[in-house]
Length: 82
Image (cartoon, rainbow, N blue to C red):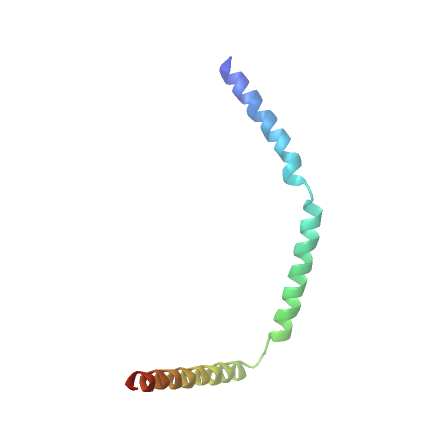
């Protein structure tokens, strides 16, 4: 008898929660569809079909960052000597 009551209560809880779970799902679908569309547009705008250009750009930015880091380390060393 107790098992039947537990199953009945759990069934009612599941049925009651389906309304909460399904609430505003269309709104979220619309929001996520817009976000997906914007993400695709941004990816297409940023895409460069030339892999050599992409690699050269990455190498250039890495070189700049490395030079800046070395410069900062050099400044820190000079400040410690003072």
